[in-house]
Length: 367
Image: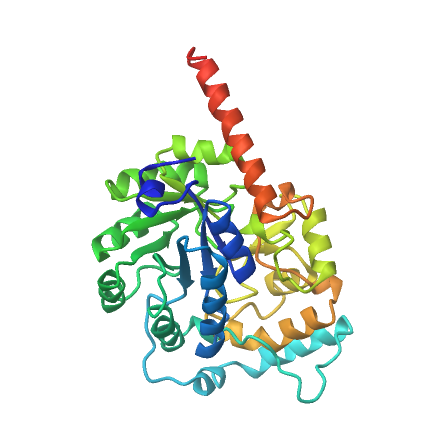
């Protein structure tokens, strides 16, 4: 599974694996792919530095990258407290009533409420970059459009490639004009924030739109056959995220959530604004149903929704309240039927890729 891009980066397989878990990212790199650690949950610079130190010690000198979230529109001079003060009281009551309906216990006194999605704020992302640029990362990806021009320049000054996710050809052209180095064409099937266009349609359109920039196909990809399809559509690699959630190295800290992922089918996900205020594909739960109910108040825009539901999500996860328990995940969840190591996933990917190539060769009369 080699392409011009994988050869440039010195990796065996053109498989880029996004994950919030350092152990998974490092294992992806060691397996011959390119591990990309998600930084959004790191609100403390020392925590990110600690995990990047760990990555350095467990990647055997092989390349890896970092994914940050820098919103396209900057809100300058506004504190987190000021943003939170914008949340309507009716939405707070809705959350409280929903948790009470499902009997979700409160956190113990003094127990931290967990990640508050402050990583969506540009100021936080910039502190992450201050840490990251001290490490030999080879790729910086931004999940919400092109990074600001000074960030792109700073990355290039460090010899770091810059990637941006795109859900449409128009977005992709904007990234090219901004000076990024590669585009991740993320289709509707993907987990997390997505656009409206399916991967099979989106990938070749983005390839044509940004030529000669390399493109990674993303969304609904979790088998070697699907990787072959992405490369056949003109991509120089694939970007996988959901498939790593049920790997043995993942740190979901919830056996019930893992069980829900293993049991889910491709129709058990939904694009909902319930998590962050922007459409994001995730497991369908009583939580997403409540927020998508037209009789309810409806989600708030980013970043208000993320701040509103942060403590609620911490309580749901802490006490594993199954009807409400979910996570961002793509439609490939229907193929995630067992817990395997990252290396075992790669073994399956390479075998499936070889089967697809052999099949096409037979059709073309070359075998």
